[in-house]
Amino acid sequence: MTNSVYVTRTSAFLPFAPVGNEEIEDVLGRVGGKPSRARRLVLRSNGIQSRHYAIDRATGEPAMSNAQLTAAAIRGLGDVGRVDCLATGTSLPDQLMPNHAVMVHGELGWPRLEVVSCAGICLAGTAALKHAWLTVRCGDARRAVATGSELASPVLLARHFEAELEHKLQALERQPEIAFEKDFLRWMLSDGAGAVLLENEPRGPLSLRIDWIELSSAAHELPTCMYAGAEKGDDGQLRGWLSFTPDQWRTQSVFAVKQDVKLLNTNIIQAAGLAPLADLMKKRHLRAENIDWFLPHLSSQFFIQPTEQGLAELGFSIPRERWFTNLTSKGNTGSASPYIMLDELFRSGRIKPGHRLLMYVPESGRFSSGFVHMEAVAG
Image (cartoon, rainbow, N blue to C red):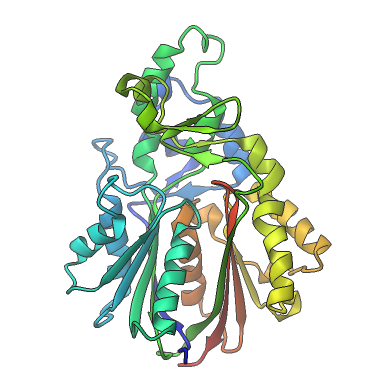
């Protein structure tokens, strides 16, 4: 016997005022005191107009932790009553140990409950959602909270790249910025957190019944694309931070978030989107005409046209008026993005009972993907 599971409340928390494109380096700083030559190129491609950073503009220092960011999103759910399970997902927790979920639990001060932390990159929040969904579905929990959160800005601050710039000064004389694979992500990532309350019965005027959540990985086929705390060798293998000296951590920016952009552009649509979707069309009898809202987590507007073209080739065309994304206004917040997207749409009044939603969450770490199918029901 399994229970139906419903999203009954959503919340999003975005720190401080939005930061426009011309303000980014005022907040994050300029590496070597010089403007990045990659910034305008990357921003023109990704289409993001504003984002949020948990950085105090007066001091240039982080103003809150990832755990505090996540707790703020959970508090935005309101008085949720007794929660039996808290599942969190994030790319960059505040510490290596203990896990992110127990730190969030500590911030909330809730009574004893099950807490689970899911690691990963963009898919971490969706993995947390699946765990929370399964606990309610199997009857272990009556009420669960799932979150996705990212605090990227502290690792994007210019000061973290100064040692590498100085170390490579001669080699970078004609191109005075850090390697593009690192500089690229300084203009792509930002901060935010989202949360949902899951219950075993619908509430309020509108709830979303989660029908299924499918996660998959293509790591058996493809090398690592996005990573941090490691360096990638010529053979494509990662060398983790434990094998570097503390001096190398600084001079090689080992802890910087890095991405192989060529590998990303070549594989992300097929490996983390079309291939798993083709399987789901068979397994779940999924048809585009039955989807009223398509919520794709896209790291960049650059991927909209290739995604649209790939869906058409797959026989799964969804008209653009049935897509919903807030990338341009909220930024790319990684594992929090699906939650922040869902919260805005859920509160907009545009979802009606009977509407079916398909959320699509690709991850470039080693090309994983997640799909969430929901149906709106009246409470």
